[in-house]
Image (cartoon, rainbow, N blue to C red; front, side, top):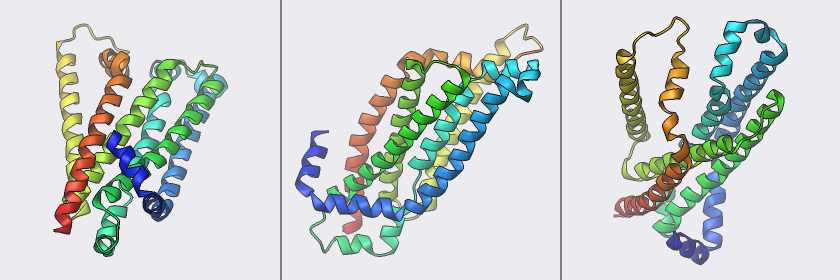
Length: 261
């Protein structure tokens, strides 16, 4: 990570300008994503209020199911917000198609500065999303009379590191492939394969179970089966983030240099 600090300290105003450019060009995308995610957060909070003193409080079966799967309200709105802010807003391919990359070759801006500015701009916007997630989960816990536990904070923090890793992988791929659709196909395919493998393993586990009751809750089953990773989630996510940051930085620089040649 020391190389990042060295480059940042040696580049000064160039880096600030590049980061500012990326954030300004993506402003509309982030505002729309933020508004949609806020709607989801508000719905989740309203449902929690309804579970306490509204219509859902009078339906014992639904209330019990929602209470058992409270993690959905805790984490899914935060996950949606982090994924939205980690996704590509189109700035890389806009830079390529508009000729900005070719223009940069005539300036003192280096490939290292360009790659690092993209990564730092994602770090800034995702840090904003992380703060919003913390505000949401705090409000949700206050409304529901829950305690904001270390488990909630550590899990959302782990999700933040994974979202950063996802964003950095997307940046690195964008510098190697000429079409945005190719990058999206690769990322979606990787997600679908991971989801398929996870679902398949859960189905195989279900086939081995005996005496399943009528009130069997599939979501609760998934939560129970994946609970083993909870104590290691934050540390594992941080480790993935560190490795991904270094690897994707060098891959991004290499991809930019290949484009220059």
